[in-house]
Amino acid sequence: MSGTFVGMPAFPAAARAAVGDATLRANLRHATRTIRDKRAGAVAELDDWARLREAGKHIKDHTLRHLDRYLLRLEREVTAAGGTVHWAADAAEANRIVTRLVEETGESEVVKVKSMATQEIGLNEALEAAGVRAYETDLAELIVQLGRDRPSHILVPAIHRNRGEIRDIFRTEMGRWGRPAPDGLTDEPAELAEAARLHLREKFLRAKVGISGANFMVAETGTLVVVESEGNGRMCLTLPETLISVVGIEKVVPTWRDLEVFLQTLPRSSTAERMNPYTSTWTGTSDSDGPRAFHLVLLDNGRTDALADEVGRQALRCIRCSACLNVCPVYERAGGHAYGSVYPGPIGAILSPQLRGTGSAVDASLPYASSLCGACYEVCPVAIDIPEVLVHLRERVVEGGDVTRRGVRVRLRPAKGHAAERAAMRAARWVLGHPGALRAGQRLASRTRAAHPRALPGPGRAWSATRDLPPVPAEPFRDWWRRTHGEGSGA
Ligand code: SF4
Image 1: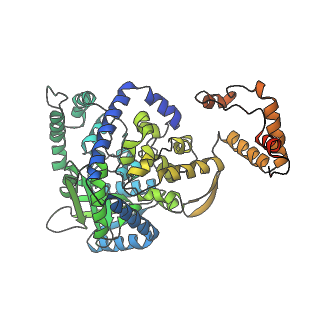
Image 2: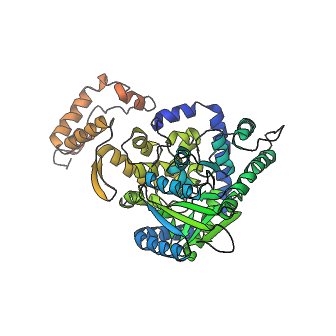
Image 3: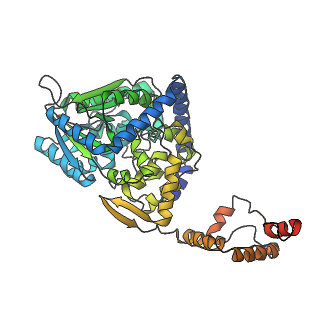
């Protein structure tokens, strides 16, 4: 995965800074509560929501089980329809491929559809290093780009900004990137949208190269699908002469029938709409319309490693609806930047450590960025058991363990900072496996109970600061049982 967020502190430190920002918390609280209430209403309209959710889960699991077969079918169909398929093992290879393809067109500007995959690999930065300027055309992505900011939400990347902040960014920054904001711009949503529309239109009409991701790829016909709300995607996908799509390999679905399920669950889970305003589909190239050249870059970048993990692989079902972010009490308070990756919230907490590994302090901290309340699992339209994967990844962080990296089984070293926890668990295992030692320890604890501290010392202080330590009883249970039931009573 790219180093877009390199240098971020681990989750606890980053979250502490975010929690202290009252404006950020107010923006997040307002936005997430509004979206999640609307989503609940949109989902409640469907009697068969539970069946759709189950169907989505099974389609994704089936496809992941036969991923090789469906990807090869997709490649055949895209090629037959006039497109070219490229395979990228990691971010560096994907960036090299896209940069070369843009350079071959002779262009120095590209327009982009909102795409998590290109953010994941840091494509804009790679293009910039090669002298190519990438213009984001989704409204929220435009705000993030103009503000030299980072996205903090999957669906609403500028969720941490309020209208006043957006107006100020447009006023000061639009002129540096192209058409300036109109004089006297206010923070009225309609005026802000119009300013963005005018700014972007000249870029759409000028661009010769478009770059996109895709929400889905239909293997049986080699068709790519983008769903969006603003129409900017439709412009990027149809106006340029060359279209380059960078898509994670897990986005393939076998058939159009399968796609139908997700076209019902995705809009309701993400924007709380019955149907999203724009659904663009394209298959290769056509002589009569649209781009003359189409390139599909299929991105692995850690996905096959995640696929090899029996518990963790369910994260690859994700359709990036962001419903889990909007219900998460941790996300609502900490915001998206604290997760140190383009994938924030509960899905980021299980996806980033699998795509990037748990070797860094940021990634080792992410599986702990949750209260395990389970709200994310309840709303997930493909039933990803996020709490289960979080606990599984915590185990990996503490124990190290085996994972697959680029098809090779490797043993991870346990993350630093967890040595004390591991030592405590080993000691507990030994004591619980030796009844004599356990009995002696319990009696000693009872006899010395008057001297027990009310708070733990050292690093344990933070834990006991918010909890009451239970007092040790005056008599161990086993002794009480023998005394009250007799020596041969089975205690
Ligand atoms: S994990 Fe589920 S709820 Fe969260 S973004 Fe992915 S599909 Fe949506």
